[in-house]
Image 1 (cartoon, rainbow, N blue to C red):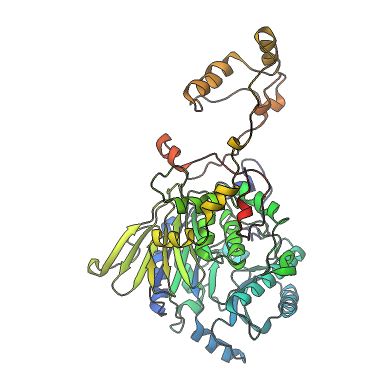
Image 2 (image 1 turned 90 degrees about the vertical axis):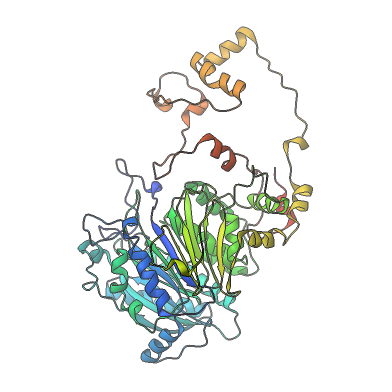
Length: 570
């Protein structure tokens, strides 16, 4: 659901050169965290400076004080919200057993009250304990929010919920997920075009503050963030530049589990496959409630929002955050001669479950227990990090976002293509990429499963290549099907002799096949979907290492299961 500058929800219609399917983002992203998980307000202050110094990576509209979007994700500030709860007249249970979610609701009071009543009923139906509402304090004048941003601004409220007695944190998170999916989908379908219902976050571990702001406006706009009682051990920030897209309050980042710089250029295929998988997916963790979370991908999502939807589903279906990221953003494993057989088998097995989500993309992710970052296998987005003697980790799209004494720098570097940079708060340390992936590669005998189950063309007898046509009969049929001298000389012959597609730089000014009065080859009717975004050119050497057209075909199994039979594909 996109709250647009014109006040309406959703994407505009495709008009002229605008096409809503080409929505992409290009942004600044980063995080500040304490390795030992020690919470402080200083982490929050550092994160504000990190984001403000990436202001140039964000965008703004015709009004300089109307931003494309900015936001921050932090751990749940327990002491801060206990004070707030006391002021509101209720008591919070222990940390991890309650949730505070930031919600965008309709500005019209009658609609808002109706939405709140529906939300309260749904969360109770899901076995959650409703504690109360809080109108989030905002200061649009102090933050100097532009007229367009103010006109599109929703009402911002906090929803306080508690876990049923005896539920684990994971069970609580799943109930929150089911409830959020239900009230978001049900209420937005009933809203007028100019009203929004959107949950920025609803988690027992983290909370998101965001909006159609510039990075420097974020903290003045939300006074909560400047309260010294607000302490956190992690803070993920994002500054949005909406390439080919429309700014909106709900599409600002961070999302619920991640933030993103770049594009997901395989998005159409990823979305279609996730829609198709709804017919086969089942999970004992969701049981009969599985259909309550459909559609898995929310309508009108950006590429980042779609990625976040799928990451959330994998995580709440029982996979760890790290394994889910490895599934969605694999290394370039097909042509890497130095990769261990176990890791290669892990990636090959999971490629039978899910296709890669390719960028270029730099993605920061967290579930509150760990925070990390990863580049996709193209590696075409900047991400650099510092580790200091006072147990701070600073990662951002650029260096220099925080002034750091070089004497305090223990380690510094940049993210590498396909490699994961991970900080585990439970262990209190950085986990090297090789160690992390060795652990997950060794969890199951992926290599043995593939050896027994994977089918290749070698398993099938091939019929001898015989053509019933030759000579004049062949030429007659080639002319009838649109083959030309140019096709033979410049297309087919180089493919046969050089074993690769021919290269050319001339434009194609011929008539579209569907409008031509000549008989055309069948594949002339199909064109590659192309979005001109911020991608540098790929040279043939990198292309050979990074890219592959090989993929599994055949019936897919249940996405959330990890069994030997899942590898039974061609």
